[in-house]
Image (cartoon, rainbow, N blue to C red; front, side, top):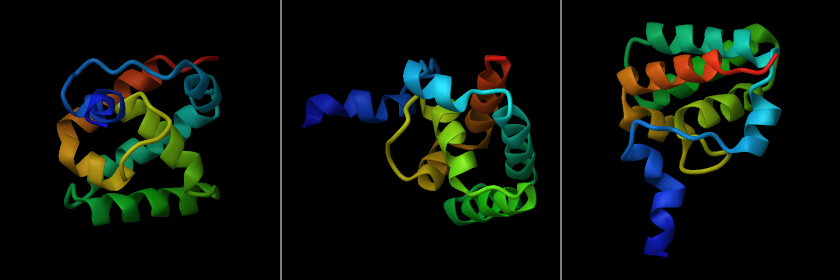
Length: 114
């Protein structure tokens, strides 16, 4: 079990994020880029960078865009962790911190297909 820790949570311990190729094909698509930009802006404007505030920001952004939260959750998770699944998104964002989250979202958006 401990041997799986790096694969599951290695993104906490490195600044180099490698994206799951299958997930990237599905989530890093042109229509998700402006959505992720709006989410990035909402996170940047959040009064606090904690799990509850980030969850509210994501859900409000989804509502404003007229999409389900999952449409934002999946590319956001992939952008910051490189993985399509893992620990609670909002808590991992809080633990990573605003600076790393913003940098990882920016890096991911630069590599979108299309």
